[in-house]
Image 1 (cartoon, rainbow, N blue to C red):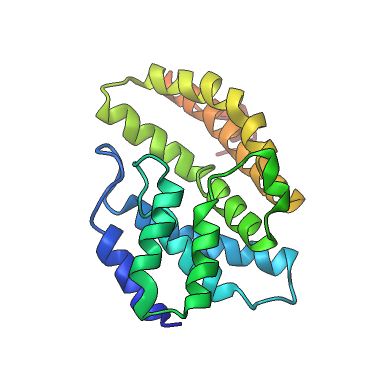
Image 2 (cartoon, rainbow, N blue to C red):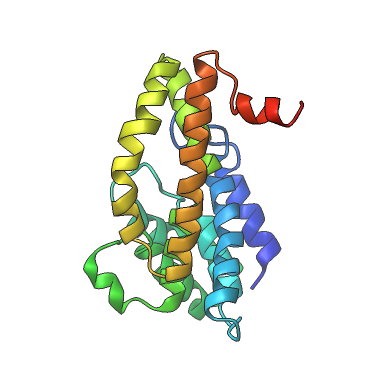
Length: 213
């Protein structure tokens, strides 16, 4: 497998595009890069003695959102990736890559039958959308849509938490749920601080005074 050429191809296709007008340039390319790193971290935890699919997981991460924004983007992305990678991967490698891409968004009960490699990718993909990137996305959306700080606060306090349980249920592994919980706790604390500072308050003022700062 020619990873260097495959990565260059992914950048050429996605590096200067944004999936939505309000998102940053190359958002799906850089999302793919982060997922590629996350999926290998999860693999080392869950399948520590099996690095047989690391290159496949990496390339699948780079290309999984190639057709994001279109209907049935996972299936269409798998079909498009199959056309593009024939110069860089063997037929078996392409089939394995496209198998992951084809169902990466399938969070139905039938996912219990998926291979560990598919499940690893699904969790890495899901986890990348939360934590600090969740905040970044919320802010860029708000600015582009003329929203105020109060609108962002409403989203952080009400809309996002109501979806936490569903997103958590969609994860495949306990370690993924623990990582997600840590990200959720970070977001809760950030929300409290953001609310205070957006109202002109000083965060943890009593602790600052007590510490002699």
